[in-house]
Length: 357
Image (cartoon, rainbow, N blue to C red):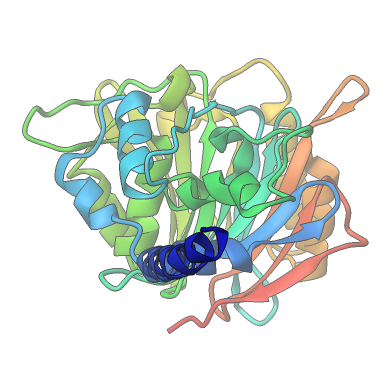
């Protein structure tokens, strides 16, 4: 009897094994892009800085059909479309940032940006949508729920929430040499048109990176969408392109307002600049602005890359003994080259390149 049971069980176990192999093979095919993306994730700085390439379609065109009127809407879309049902809780962060656009001696356009806040791990993300421009962007991983004691260092499951990254950029540059960065401001009075789709703070950046080749195109696009600011943290945007044009986009008196550069460079900090309003947060926004402006003026209105990097490291925010500078990035909009470093660590600069055409 025992021998008969063994003979009967073997074909059954064989069939179970075949079924499991089919299921695993199907899962690998179905989630091949997600797995490819997660396996590309690598840590580039011990402070908590990562790089990843997102492979495949992240569904942004689908998202633009309905948009999102709240973070809950974005969480629901990302959970269903990218995270295969695993929920995400967007944690809003924002504080004192500084950004500038300036030329170097070779007439190349440099776009520098600091992000200052409490500890925030970062991800440099590469995307190449079929119906949009390839780009490199910087994502605040704290926005996806990561923290100093919860980093995407371990298993694929630990990394899984990074798949939401295409919807969470805080700055970036695309293949046409257009760059954009958000900076917190104390006020933003946004317009609303019931016939327009609504986007949030970061999906607005994704819109510009994926769909705009010039500052003019970016402004035109932004006017076609409503915007709300996640967590109530108001922002304005510094936008520049490879031609050298730059603007600050702000929302004043329920209008999208554009602050044009009044020199061969432009600087943005955490105050409303439109029409000379200069409404700040009451922190160090004007001091940081002046520091950048004085450095540029002292160098005849230009900065070389090494000078821009040093300036970014110096102008980052200190709050008492707390160093709030989380990452600095410098995009060359002319060549597509760039430099990024974490937490004022100019001795550990990562260089990158995005082909610009």
